[in-house]
Length: 292
Ligand SMILES: NC(=O)c1ccc[n+]([C@@H]2O[C@H](COP(=O)([O-])OP(=O)(O)OC[C@H]3O[C@@H](n4cnc5c(N)ncnc54)[C@H](OP(=O)(O)O)[C@@H]3O)[C@@H](O)[C@H]2O)c1
Image 1 (tube, helix red, strand yellow):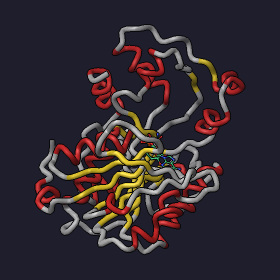
Image 2: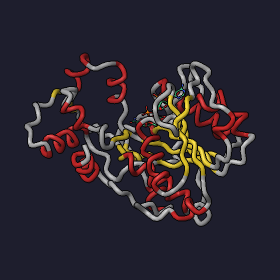
Image 3: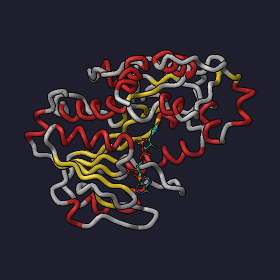
Image 4: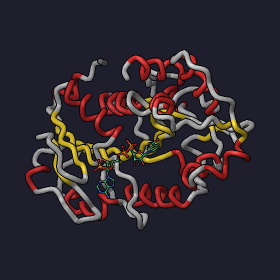
């Protein structure tokens, strides 16, 4: 665990809205460093630190949930109308709080298809998919809210319990090859760690409202799958060409193959000095393999 002493010293209270894969990792880590973290899901669960927030059913957290909150992380995607669920239901509440910081997890899908070129925060977003247009609208809603928000654009998220290993074990894997196609990715631990690094050094680092969190080595899907089979000591099935596999893919799976980009992390890792824990898929997948 890195040293996040000042976050602890300030007795911060975090609300993590949308405690799914990334939110759970973040909540667990901030508790480990001694901060309070309350989390939301759409339906009730047994966790005493969890509360229900469901924008579709208009279930809004009670007033007492917000007592003493200093930091909020929203991990909730746009709703089906393309609106941000948190801003739609809670904007006025958030505006009434003395918040130090809000983090919003967005996607690098807003950059659209760059045909394999690198994209960074200074490139104009050019969303190709409808869901990415919705996402860009949500980013805009957050920026225009005048709340102290910082936006993190993420590529494919993986980590223990959600990686190619699960797809192989559950026989859901499709080994597809498409010439020159690459994907960027990020290990879930680096999302948490990078955000905490930025918070910890908030006073000494220049503030950027939009930051990519991606690893150093975008690469083809086949390389990743091949490496997983090697670690599992299994033989990888023969790859199918994308053109042949396409008709068997769901529209959403197909849509991921329609975009090809390399996401730059230079702002985070060079300008701001964050050191990735898992700088490429090999190191990250080893961690997933050992922590299955
Ligand atoms: N997965 C990826 O590879 C990827 C890549 C780039 C960006 N992102 C984005 O990054 C964020 C975090 O990703 P993730 O994979 O960690 O998310 P996730 O596991 O899918 O969790 C999403 C959370 O949002 C909650 N939620 C969804 N709709 C809601 C609504 N209308 N009202 C209230 N809560 C709602 C879910 O509630 P329940 O727990 O009740 O389901 C869940 O806790 C998301 O916005 C995601 O779209 C994901």
